[in-house]
Length: 177
Image 1 (cartoon, rainbow, N blue to C red):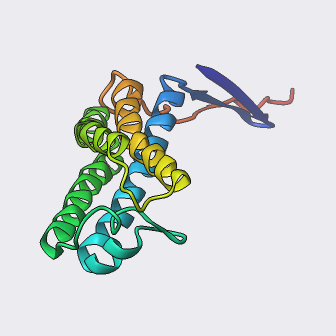
Image 2: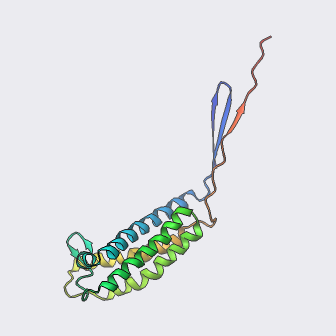
Image 3: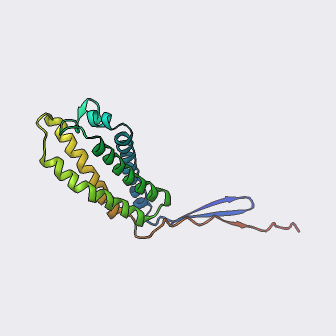
């Protein structure tokens, strides 16, 4: 706990700042924001422009999906919807600022991310270059790593402890004799 005092001519203002798991809450929020943004971008792209997602994901001149089999509109749309669903759960954890929801979101990303990583690590399409393959495996590894981090880093208490309101202590005026 940090206590600060600020005095003026009439009294003192006492502020108490509780540092109960402040860094864990910050780390949890950063992890969840990264997962939510990634889920929203990939999900919206694959849901609303599935052929574009298939032919040009992840962008920047690389093609990770199109080199791995024929285009399937239904499958591409389902992948997008799945990413949007995970992003929605992650956004709910961010909105409610609840460590239990943060762990549930992390578990969802972990359960999805492990088989996804295993597939990408052991299946290199013939048309994919070495750098692109390495980047795809690193990107696939980030999902379960961040999911596990969300589970492990989330604080024990469900919600963050709020700092108490400042305390104002006023001194009585001196009477001149």
